[in-house]
Length: 348
Image 1: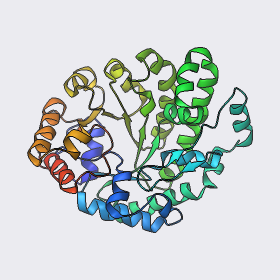
Image 2: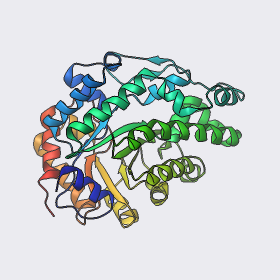
Image 3: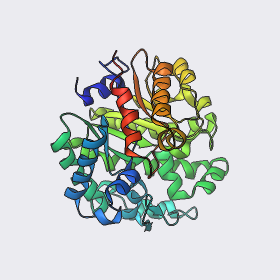
């Protein structure tokens, strides 16, 4: 089986010939590892693609991500001001929605979401880079692109703290903001899927974390956007990968309803508990600690952690080995090698 086939088989909750082993995102790490910057690659899709291809030749992640770290920049064509830093992902300087009327103004100003995204140089760079990456390694590796999930993108637009409060006070406006964010996320992906540049979506709905929202509020606000997004992606025949940060133990039973094929579990969740609750319904990924294990651990500790994860959730297939979140920018490359190799060598 090719690396891509191993991942896609696991996504179908089946047993591939070996454990698929991947990182999640890795954009900030990749930039630092190669000496590039997020703003320095804008308008240079070939250079962006070459960077991703070279790095994956080195670490051999079964799944690669184009545009990782640029998630906030998807709001730039809608008026978002982006701040670039020497190290770290670009930030949205301030929310786009500051009062009850701002959402209506945004919708009126940008009625064609796809065309608005297509006008942005960063989005176009990612779209073109994805084509180059898939042409080069797409036969062997699963090529994806990253974005915030609808709830998290809406929180960036709205302001996280304010949205947390307004879910109780102004739920209708929050829900409409999430609907608009869902359109942005979908139309970021649609051109790449239709052109065959990517074969999987990879959304991180970090703000839907169990550390921030209850299972009840997740079901009311985060779940509908994920269902709508993944439903439209499924109709295009594309694989669907989801990561949600934090302790989501109380929300686990809702994850199969998101429409994702595989859920990447944060390190705060016991993989054995997740496997027991939803392992028969969807693929599970995770979940070694990216800092204490991947970044700081010895080779022996890293290998032991990978094996423990597999033993907790991966003995029957339907499992992908990966860290519990994105890896720190200073993670030693040899640590990544040790982790991914442990997965690749675990045969079924």
